[in-house]
Image 1: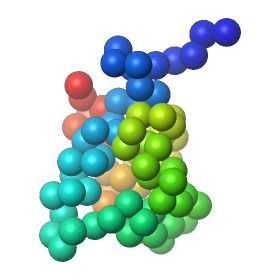
Image 2 (image 1 turned 90 degrees about the vertical axis):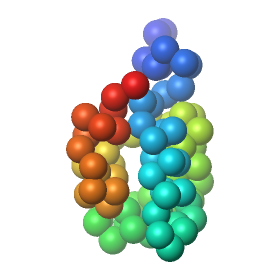
Image 3 (image 1 turned 120 degrees about the vertical axis):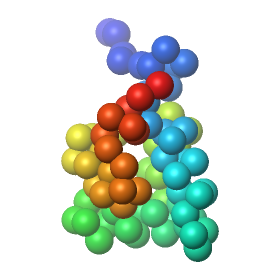
Length: 82
């Protein structure tokens, strides 16, 4: 069965940008803190899920993508662009 993957073999397009945006936040935001921020928007996610998203090991749902856009104040086009 075919699995959808990006050209670089990852399971999402936004993982590297999520890492960069998280690291650029001031004050610094850990993966655990980002997970808590997403939880405040009503989606159950933990530190491990954030790590897997950032490493491209996990797919990102459209609901999660929308919340990440709100948290980072960027567009979905920005997170999805290569």
